[in-house]
Length: 384
Image 1: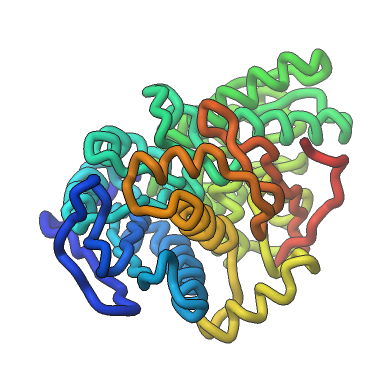
Image 2: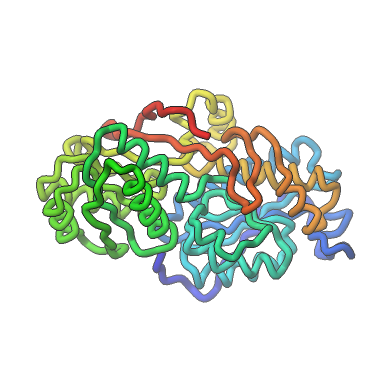
């Protein structure tokens, strides 16, 4: 996201035990007698700050629970929190600061456009990355063996979206993005998936500007193109405005938003008429999933608010990192990276293992339908 941030990036050290500032000789983070540090780089300022704050709460909850069980390798865990503001320049500065805090694993990542430029920084420091939310295929371009995605990639989400559109009888698709990494790659993958289906034509692909006061011209072009389904792949602020403009222009077809837009107050201020036939492809939404009821209650107790989207994945990223450190028997980053690659466990979000390229073996998505002020899950065929 194009956000203006201060030159000084605040790095918050959420300490749940004592501190140590040395490294052990093997390149591990922290001394053998000190704490183990995990770093989470997420947006704490800007338009996506509510998502970043929820991710920090979930990550801290996982750390606190691990410490309550005695920590890992007999050592306590600390969470180092950095603000990337979903901005590439801010993220780079924050990543350098985080590396200086001797983190063993990076467990953050929300906006892919901010995460991509940090890859080489963590790679140079030997810090493996378990990305909680970032899932653009741009993350795979460097072919680093130290980057692991908790969420399914945009290619998997595009296939999921196009498959559902096909089953609903959609015939003509309009795709809209905001020009940044994740939305662009999801848009391109969806266009490819629609064309591959052989049943959905593509009316066009449009780019809108973040923060613009309105998208009336784009809405008109979509309607003139004869689209009966619109897929917006960006974030919720622009998604909400696009819905308003489409309905104001008389569009009555389906509007679908990607997971970056279902995460946040998408429905605030929209009428029932505006949210009619509004859907979203999403990661996991704990409050809508009965199987996560117990965990959701633990989260409410620990945090004081309900768990929103992104929280399960953030919790799982910490769980994966700590499980790998435990199995590696050391905080040596190379050993931990190898252990992450060999992960085979059941996490909150389901079976967790990784393909050789760092993508998740069995990604999972939800199809949501707006119900006025909230969403309900529409059951889908088994994913795998």
